Every structure is written in structure tokens, then in C-alpha cells.
Length: 339
Image 1 (cartoon, one colour):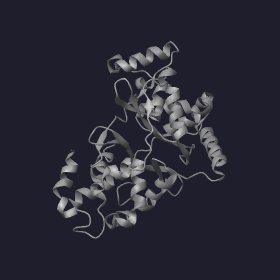
Image 2: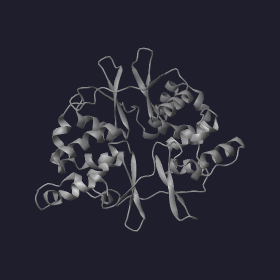
Image 3: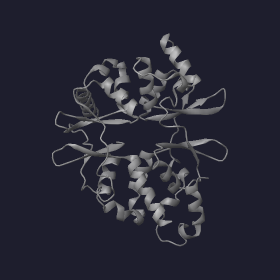
């Protein structure tokens, strides 16, 4: 049980749904209820990295747990961050000091140098950015939100017997809260605040120029331990966004040549392919401004399924960024105030 969960347990009588309050308390919702209808997608530990990537592509997901049928246990998660790290190691664009190399990483490096297939169990959690975290299905949503506010992007929801019920991510939790917003009046005040009032209008903008190569952008993301970069023109105006999940467009049909095109070319190609697939001409604009409300920003994050919004000034120049982790940090502060 986390410290956050103990706080909620101690306040159980005050918060118990349907007893002392008319409306539901969002912090007391059980994590298991958010994954009840989820179809769990797993990846076999011995599948190749390429096959694992295909599983993500086929199911339209960004990560999946890796299961070892011999050990009869989950051995980690595999996501596009791990795939990006794998690609950089494969292309010898990433150096890992010997003392920082795990046995699995050494095995992976040896296999790639010999052009051998690499089982995904060697590449799961390779990026080191999203460790395999679990919570019990009885865990309250408030405790999960606290965890998400610290930078954890997803948790595996387990039952008391150790069976995985589903994956609860920052994105799916945001989607749940937005769909049930009318049921939780405690959230209404913060939704009306501006990003500036929430302390979210500024922030270090990590970016690449539109003329830089995609491969260089991936290297920059890895070096700076971020999952996305703003793509800017020479005047600093926001042209688009490039994230590690865009690797799926490169891996689809093995368009590895896309690694050497410019970031702006990639943005244009993705916009074109998404327009063809959706039948729409427009590409979601991933920007807001300092006066945008917290609620409006969350609505855009939900609608676009993006993990961050870039904050721009009146000239369209990127001056800040709001990530899902920032969002949950704000929401976790509400819990602290309430309790």
C-alpha cells in the first residue's frame, strides 16, 4: 500500500461513496474498475523485437507487458521508447558505458553486432524510462494519480492472485476523468483556471529545427530523456511535433529511410498519411496558450490522444509545454488540499 493510499484509507468514512456525499469522489474510484472492459494484449518474451513492434502496431497501442511462459511471469513492458533505444543501439548511434550495461543489454548489443534476431525480453524496459510498476485492483485512483504526477506513465493492475487485469495509463486515466467530469464537481474549479494560474504556462521547450534529420531528433530525445520534441522553424514558430511514438510510421513497412529525412518532412508525411486514413484534411494542432484553461487543455489532450501540448505566444513561438505528468501533478495537489 502506498502512502497516498493510506491517506485515503484513513479518510474512508468521510469519502465513502453514497454515504456522506451525494456525488462520487473521483479519488476513491478503484483502479480495477477502469480496466474492467480492457482486452489485455501481451507479448511473448521470445518474440523478436520486430514482431513485438508489429503487435503494438496491429493493436494500436503504445506499450504491452512481456510475458515469459517458461518462468510463468511478466518480465517487463515493451514500448516505443524501448524500440527507439533499440534502433539507436542497432545503428551504433548510442554509447552505453560498460558499467551501466545490464547482462540483457550486453547480450542485445552482441546480437545486434552479429545481425542476430533479438528477443523482446532483452529489449523490454531498455530505455529505462518506464519501469514495470504494478498496483492492486483495489488501489484508489487518487493514489494512482499521485504516482502519475511523479512521472510514472502507466501501471499494471493486478488482482490478489497476481493475475494482470489490465494496463492503466496516464492517457486512459485522463480519458476516464474527462468522460465522467460531470460526476465530479470537486474538479470543476481547477478546470476553469488558466494554465498561467496553474503554473503551467512556462517550461523548458526541447526542440529541433525543421531542417534537422529525424535520426538526430531521436538521438536528442534519448540524450535528454524525453519522449517528444517541438519542431520549430528558424524564427522559433511551432511547425509540429515529433515523438518516439512516431517510430511506428518508420517501422510500418520498414520505412527506415525515413530516419534520414528532415523532421518537417516527417511531420508532413504523417499528416498526409493520417489524412488519408481518416479522410480528413486537418491535422490536430498540439498547441495552447497561457490563457487557455486547464479544462480546455485537457480536452485537447483527450481528443488528440497526445501526451503533451505546446504553449505558444501570440506569434506562434513555443514558450512552454504541458505534459500529462504536469496535468497529474496539478490533480495530485487537489488531493493534498482535500486531505
